[in-house]
Length: 378
Image (tube, rainbow, N blue to C red; front, side, top):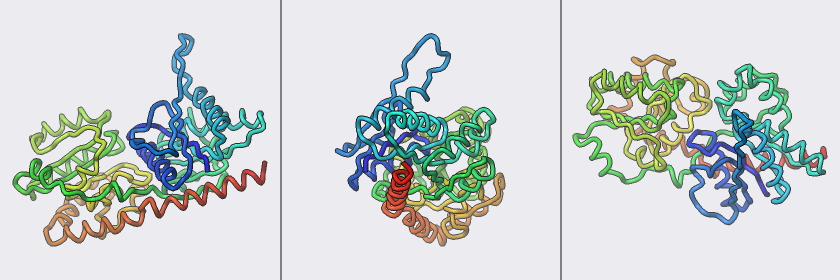
């Protein structure tokens, strides 16, 4: 099958999932065409079945903002026509679903019928999509898609709750490449960060307010009063400067390291003892799954789709959003030397349930169904 994938090419969850999906599809023989404004960050290897088509956005003085949606639709039209695609799979509703709808109508006028699948990832629905500036377009674009998927039951239900969506939404969870995300022997790295055998706590995110990094810092602040430990904060974003200031005010800046954006996050996770995700909302929790694959147990909130991933008392613990004291007590329980090995083993076992080799067939079956239904209606 020839598949066009439209996504954001960044470190964000939707872009990571879209890129890893495309790479996996290419490995099993599908021809995959990425259509976006720059090469995706995770598109880091060569395969004869992988193609990248850059969306060129012309700069005209007339436009206050570059018309990305129009340029994207035009590139979709070109790629579908000249590469004879069977399917367009767009990740993140805004603006990809609406751009795909426009491309589909342009192609239909030329006698070309291309089915479109939209995958909802989270903030495109739970945050951005609810804005009255976007809601009508988001609702229309989802309903006009030939197929719609969501990465969790929570996101599916939240979409139905907040939008007048009439399309059936198929839940296909996020996945993990266990060939890449696995515990590596990085003892020298652990020794450099924790020279006296301290426990290593890790948090990764895009440093937005919804991630509640204040809670990460306060959990660590209270935890280190009971247990020698260090904290690694991976990622970057609008909250970083304020969080750095907070660490200085709490007098623990020397025990906290800000690593910025990392490509090889699995190397850091390989030496971690605990992963923190106290988010206000998570549609799935891909970063938490990556940690679990590297044998790292979780302390998370019980928000959004996290209860579908983190098994209470087995792979870690969940607490109400903002309940720092409960998270600290649960963290101390996990980190006890009698408990930590079991939690680590359980985390890996749970991650194996989301192995890409198990999830990929679900996407392939859904593609085939949507293409067949589209042909029947054409």
